[in-house]
Structures are given as structure tokens and as C-alpha cells.
Length: 469
Image (cartoon, rainbow, N blue to C red; front, side, top):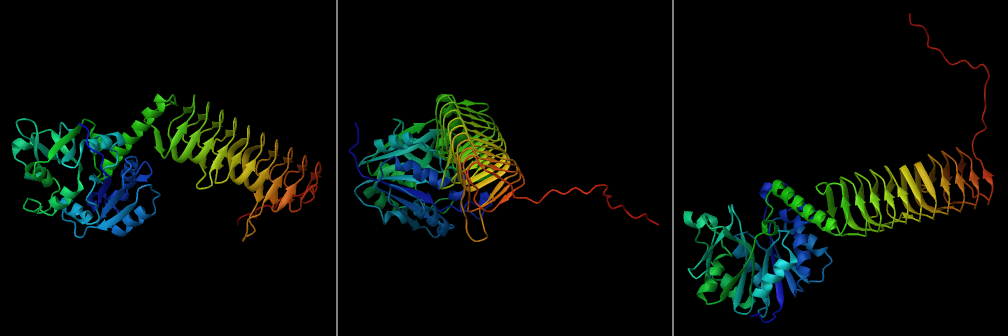
């Protein structure tokens, strides 16, 4: 029988010190796939349509509260302080004061980042006004977890923490994950009845399970076999293991969508990545921020790509670095970028544009067919169609105080080793002779040369070293 729908409030315990991380950063703010552990947890809960979220802070509470406050979320979220930290039950006691009585409470841990939305939804669906639901998992080696004790009829009796368990109880393989859904009004009363008469001298939230049984609440379990969904982070080693789990899952999802990965084990995705059909990605590529890749795109080895949209049929050659930050980068259809190219915020490449090795583009648009194939800088510029931009040339866009724009109209040829001192316009179809420093706008169709006159001195003798005595 399905439970009546009740408002859902989420409590996230995020006060742990994380001593074994050996870091000045709070444990819940350590990064997995480019996001804080706590961020993963809060992002997942947004899919549950929760009414509110409460984050219980402790160590480095100012840093955690700042991180929570800077998030953009559809769920109103507040922080409460747990000081001192006296156990999981004590943490929920701090949250109880700001919880409404009319809903369900989903209790999560801020250092358990990979619990899936479907798993949490299934757990919440089991809970109700007189029903508690526990997320459990079967572990062949359950060291460190509380064991689920059951009556002979298989109903839940209690949770016993490992340090308080008997040898026989430690042989139980079904363990409590630390995640529960429970009626709020009952929970608020129950955590007030907790005692710390145990080996740790702490207030265990797990003790409320036995209380629920005694109070004749129905206790359901949602048991899963995927241990990674309930795995916490207490050390850099565990964090690295979860990173690989996360990335492996991402890689498999991409391949199921048709992406060809040269090696699924050598891919890192650290933000939303959307892909079209017939996309090939070589080894050691990193994607972060928001990245959208069109159809028939090839990405070479060792590329770092962030906050970018890549249109159909583009090729990103090896060792290319793209990061659009907040402004974004646009790579047009059929464009060729790299190897060893750098596209910075505001770079917009039209169809068929070529950006070659050691070329940097920032806050500049290049229209269809423009080419900058070697060793160049294009910043704060508007480059027209079919422009050929020579090796070693730069737009000198900064005067020491302000940025200025260079306009290069269609069909211009810029020779090698030129400096275009902005603000300046190079007229359509014009040619800039190699080695020129252009400080004034040039007319359409003209050859413009601005360099010292070549002088040759016949029979010139180079200086010779004086003989040593």
C-alpha cells in the first residue's frame, strides 16, 4: 500500500572534522568530479521536490555555511550549528528545532555523494506518518557500519553500531547506510529521548530505530547491493576511489549514448556534458563546467574543455585547452582547433575556422573560413570571413589601463610577426606586410607596411674575440 504524500524536509549532516583528510578544507567541501561532496548531496535532493533542506554544520562551519549560501537551489536551504559534535543523534537534535511537524524528514550525510535519486525516491515512498524507512545495503565485508538486527519474522528490531555489537552481530552483512526517512513529529520527540550510554559516549541516531519499534511504528527497509551509493569519504584514498566510480559510471553512460571513447578509464567529466551522434573522444580528456558537443565531432588526446559549445563536424586536436568560464566559448561547425591551441572566454569561431598550434583567442569573433594557423594572439577582435592571420602576429589590445578592439574585415591577409595596435580597423581585402606594426586604420584593398627600411652593409666584419694572453 502506498503511503499518503507528506511534505518532505531534508536534513544533511555536514559537521564532521575529517581529520584523515589532512586538509584545512572541511571534509564535505572536498571535491569529487569538480563539485563539493555536499554539493552532490544537495543537488540530488532537488529532484525529490523537497520543501526545505537543513544543513547541520560543525567544524569549519563558516566555510560550509558560505558554500551553502552561494549555491543556486530550488530548495530553500538553511544551516544550523552543532557545537560540540556529540554524534549523529545530537546533529539531528540541532535540526529538529527548525523542522515542521507535518512532514517527512530524509536524513542524509554530506560526505556520501553518490546516492542515486531513484534510490532516495524509493526510500521516501516507503515512509509515512507512522512508518520509518531505512536505506540498507548488503556488504560482504561490513566493517565500520551499524548492523541491522531483525526478529525471527524478519521485521526490523534495531540497529547496533559496530563498536557496541557482539561477535555474532558483527557477522550480519545487512548494514544501515545512515540514510533514513521518518515522520517529523515523531522524530523530533525521539531524538530528545536519546542517551549517550555507549562505548563512544555519543548520541546515536541509530537508536531511534529501536524506539520506533517500541512505539509500534512500521519500520521498512529499502535494501540495495550497490555499495558505492552509500560509501562515505574519510580519506584521500576513499575520495579517489569514489572519483573513479563516478567517472566509470559517466563513461558507461556516454558509451550507451553512442560516444566512442578510446579508453573509458581515461576520461574525467566534472560537469554537465551533452553529446550528439558519432562523437569520438581520445584518451586523457577532461570536461568541466557546461559542455555541449554536436554530431560527428572528434576530440584528440589530452584536451581540457570547459564551458564550451562545439558544433557539428568540428575537430579538436590533441592538447587543446578551452575554457569559456562565465562568458563561454563557441566553436563553429567544421572548425579545426589545435593542437596546443587555447580558447579563452568570449571566443566565437565561425564555420570552418582554423585555429592552429600555439594560437590563443580571447573575447574575439572569427567569421567563417578565417584562419590563424600558428603562434598568434587574437584578443578583443572582430575577424571577418576568410581572413588569413599570420604566424607570430598579435592584436595589441591593452594600453595599460583599458582594452581596445581590433577590426579585421573580410579577406584580409595579415603577414607574419605583425602587431595590430588597437583600436584599429584593417580594411576589407587589405594586406599587412610581414613584420609591420600597424597603429592607424588601413584602407580596403591596400598593402600596408610599417617597418624600418632594410639596409645591407657590404663587406661588414663581425667583431672578433680578443686573443687571451
